[in-house]
Amino acid sequence: MHPIFASDGAPAIPIWFTTTDNLTDIAGKLDAVVFAKAAGFQAKPSQSLLLPGKNGELAAVLFGLDKDGDPDSNPFLPGRLTGIVPAGTYRFANAPHDARLATLAFALGTYEFARYRKANGKTLRLVPPAGVDAGELSAIIDGVTLARDLINTPSNDMGPAELEAAARKLAKAHRAKIAVTSGAKLARNFPLVNAVGQGSARTPRLIDLTWGNPKHPKVTLVGKGVCFDTGGLDIKNDAGMLNMKKDMGGAATALALAHMLMTRKIPLRLRVIIPAVENSISGTSFRPRDIYRSRKGISVEIGNTDAEGRLVLADALALADEEKPELIIDFATLTGAARVALGPDLPPFFTDDDRLAAELMESGARENDPLWRLPLWRPYDAMLESKVADTNNVGGGLGGAIIAALFLRKFVGNAKAWLHLDIFAWTPSAKPGRPEGGECMSARALYAMLVKKYG
Picture 1 (tube, rainbow, N blue to C red):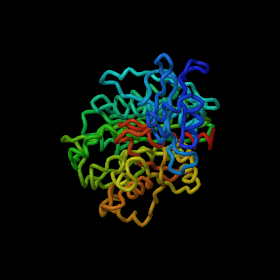
Picture 2: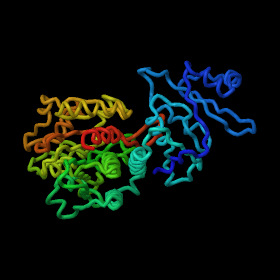
Picture 3: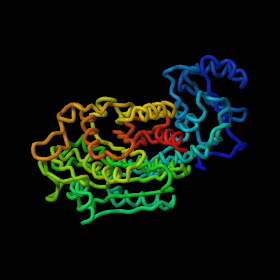
Picture 4: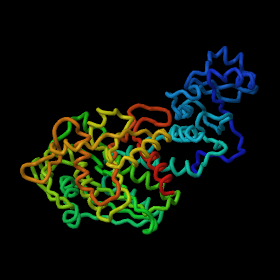
């Protein structure tokens, strides 16, 4: 059980969720009508009021929500409470619109990355509401925390070796098998991964974790593990390079989802493949116009060294595809074009499977982990043509997220279904339940979808 959860029956300060419709009734029950009016509390969304007891202690908390049924309501709004209430143990005195998501938002809102400075020291606990499975939420919270911690860690402490160590720690915790390929064997078997990582003093590698009964449905997660991306010889500017510690966010998300699934022992044969590299600049860096033959045998001309994520994913996807799994899901902080199209909060996904797309959209809406489908628009395949190789790694200047997805699609052909997610893995400014910094996007939606599908 996650430490945020207090035992049922523990002394706890009540949190009352109010709207403009129920404020009078709730304030009347608490004998706080006059106090609320004097304080100007009107139960507007996110508005809060701390009610003192007779001895000066905190007796209760009022917190405003959108009206029930409001199509624009945010089920994570209770996540704002963690920045409002003082240290202590709390309980929900009445039901918010979605008790499970409100509980999750409260828990995720307590996250703090304190590896390099003193933590704020405020300890919050919550008695789980009746009917909410605190065990399931604990697995989700721990998974999200794992991803956030990995993404927030700066690249000097989160290179390919450290990412491997995190995967090994997870494998040990769940008794999973893990294999790592590097050196000459990597160059032979995963030439695109090796090409991207060969310019760095930090050894590139491919991490391969497996768990579960081989007789169960095979689901494989592939995560982009570029631990820092300078852009290579096509170097990024300073603004473009600033947050590139998060370029391994795809790997972090894959590990987070794997933790959720393994913790809850979902009957899958799960595999996690992470190409872990640093795209650096040196005399051994790969160059524009270089040509490499991928693991799948497709020759790739390098049109831009800053389109490195799709290269490492290509070899990893080819490996995943060889055993013909039920489903391959890849995660990558892949294109700025995705952010231009949908902004920082809404990751696009791509698939040829309409049913799978509908299931994921429904799951994302239900879990408040939104995603949006973009098309694998086949006419854009022509943009990837090369005069000297089977394909280029970049196309024209427009439709970049779609073109990247079409490139990846070339390396999947045997799996029954494939899903590509172009995530941002970052919250630019704090939101309820989502502190500023590294973010685990799409994993909760996929966890819910996979549990419904296979659990």
